[in-house]
Length: 328
Image 1: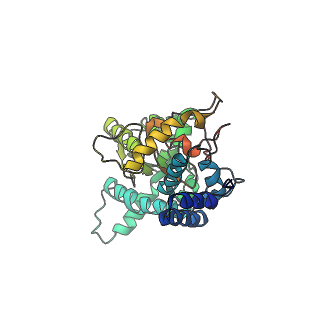
Image 2: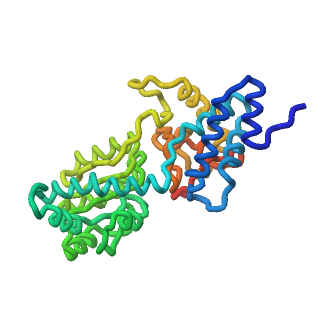
Image 3: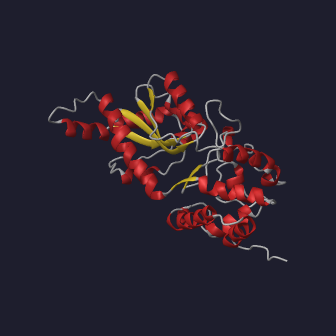
């Protein structure tokens, strides 16, 4: 009787022995090992956790059939993981690009003038920067050399515990002329809407909504907010392509790879096992918040629009990248 695999390498080797020489399986395993060393070790939630390769085996081993295990192994190589260095590059690109261009337009600066650099610098100093919903704004300010702004708020929190009048008084007293709200990643845009319910009251301050990354549903929400409020502009840095998702229903405009079709069926079929028996768990369904099925996560956390098959821990399921949730 063959020994049951106890590691991911033994598992991949067992597939090779049974189905012939599949060099692509071993190549993907080596790639995942490199990604573990270079990226996945950065994943912040739950500092004490098993090594990625051990988590990968435990996660895949949760499936019962060889076909399902192979699909999950393939899924591991499809994930788009944004590491710390990449995120800081996004921070810098957003400030030097999207935000600075917006400030130039708002301040009506002629960039051909000899004093344009000084005028741009002064306009940036009069631009108040905060996070939409929990982004570590201090890091953003340090990476971009934003100085002199001692108050670095979370606008979503302010919407629940503060008043627009208090911020209005502060901005006027400090001489700020405009507001920029940034965020690491906007999923459906629900938390962005909560922040904007607060910012929408500050009509005298032109406001730019600038997430680093935004899902398709978040783009729609952001554009709607900009249409609804004349002092809002919505300009995200990067919207990942639709291919980086397994949505609940296939998009009519896309020609999906066979793997995505198979994965959609797998995610639906394993939902009961993934969810487990704890009915108090706050989940959005097999495809995550909004039925998005996103395959993008960052070193900071796994967003809730990612299928729970990837991030949820239950009494019958081990996650690959366990999510740290703000919801009870």
